[in-house]
Length: 160
Image 1 (cartoon, rainbow, N blue to C red):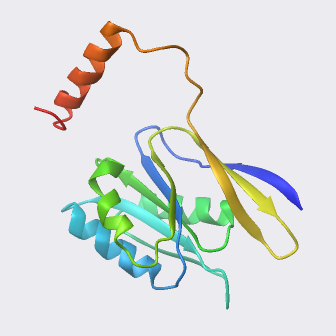
Image 2: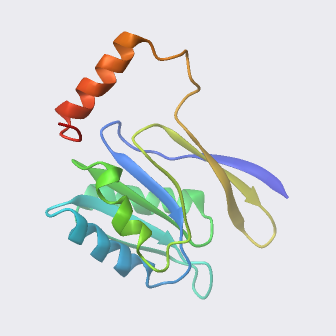
């Protein structure tokens, strides 16, 4: 057994959702959940099939994001893992819909940050041990930071 880390490759303006599901139907169900949650959503998704032909299954509405999802899924290579890339949309807008997809077992992260996936590799294959999402804290929030956080949420339209 060996531990491996695999960085998720993505542009800075793209958000990622990384998780685990359990059935080939995942691709179609995730696609339906995403397009239903946010009209005109730009996304690409890929799913690592863990039995049979063991293919990276994929779908999406944006060719570049779909290609990015396929490449990252293949690099991660963990059975039944899925990856979704979003542009012009935040994960918070689609997470409730994704959580309601019956095949979804776990969501490891949903972020715009750089992500590293920690994998365990055996003779059988790879499994996800966890993720590193972004960087470590650099300090404690101060009153000016609180004001900026609240202002940002209002700029994004998440608070009145």
